Image (cartoon, rainbow, N blue to C red):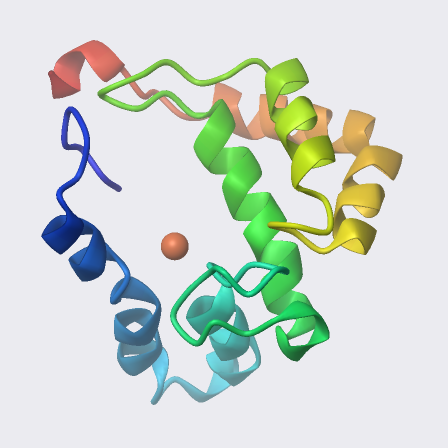
Length: 138
Ligand SMILES: [Fe+2]
């Protein structure tokens, strides 16, 4: 998890962009996880091709990675970070609606909206078991 306060430099962002390939290298020899490697490698690709690391476009991006991209974005946006509070779900949903067919696969965003109540409930339940105290990180 990123803990830096303030904006990243270009060099820092380039370094961050290495994490999908790094994750794949770490997991490569774990056979039971072979099926999730495409998600690890491609969860930061974007539907419009502006993501990383491979700049895949649309359905070139493995479906599992398109799903994880939405789940990861949801988690990142609603979670507290040292440099900001988590966003309200309503704001996250606005961003999802705007980013459908640009950043994310519209079908996956549609699936999110079709199951949003269940996802909110799961998120609430899982978060209740976490004791993240942002004040301790500063
Ligand atoms: Fe990531």
